[in-house]
Length: 76
Image (cartoon, rainbow, N blue to C red):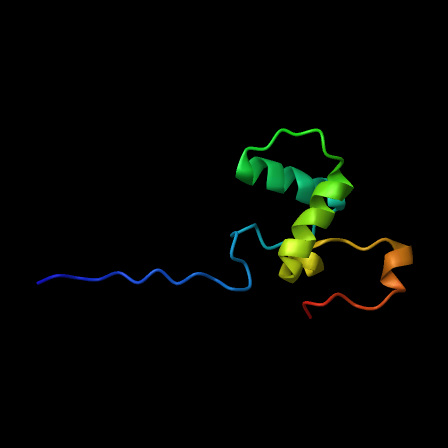
């Protein structure tokens, strides 16, 4: 008898990043740790690039007071 295992990917967290609220610096560190990257990109640039590809993670970034007054994120 052969058993099949189905892998179901979480579409809300496809990269399986810890579910918490991050500062930009913390999120950039989490990305660099997850992907083994040690580049010279500023944290804000790395996070911005990542958010354009994976907008569902935008709610995981703490907003500054200036950003909080703007329109809510696109994920919730």
